[in-house]
Image 1 (cartoon, helix red, strand yellow):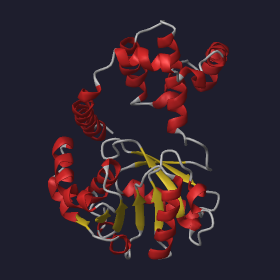
Image 2: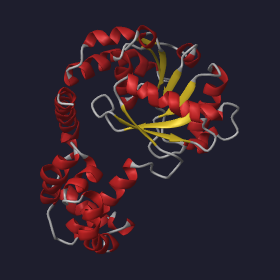
Image 3: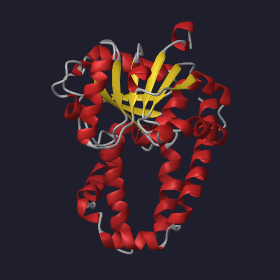
Image 4: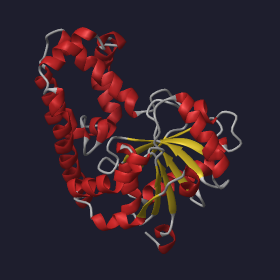
Length: 305
């Protein structure tokens, strides 16, 4: 990053899992990171938790010298250019937060939400600064999975979207710019369709949960991690995408028309899958292992791009 970029000031609102990961993303890029959480206990332990996150992900803990924990929202957002909000997925709370952020921040500061379910218009409506508000939806955990969906509200200014995209590139994230609001954004809409069909196949007894996961892990997942589905089908027919759709389009259309929908998210499916999954008590340790593996994959992909 340039000298100008290294002195950028970023506010992180919320010191939970996503907020801490965002703090690390910006800190390791050399930004001045100001973190605030309304819970004093969270503020007291957040630096220790960030140090542990660095250790597990293989990041240099020296980056945390760029992070300052502050005791008030007003201090955290003073003179920053970007606010990354990580509050609860609760509309009333979001509205309260954004009314306060709109009042406290400089007019040119961008206000970005990590929301995975609420669109910007739902909490920006009526605010004087709604043109600078957007959703910057990360994938958990964003310090090892770099994609960020940038979803504007109907009032978000194009110049704000341009600045958001440039900042995400500058801090080594992968911005995906959406043209308009849509429920679930892109990632969760894709995930919902895949999960529906997966649960349906399991409930029908076609495949076990392990077999389903292996199909993704060792099949689709291995291809898509390097190319994505569009680039994949472009290689799966001699004449590229048009040739693929001509050859296989009718078959894929028949399968998609017959695919599961919302009814697949059933209690019966949950019981079948849960019976073959590790116990909930094992989830924290498995999550740590997942994050460590994702960090290794991230380093490998970075070194081979």
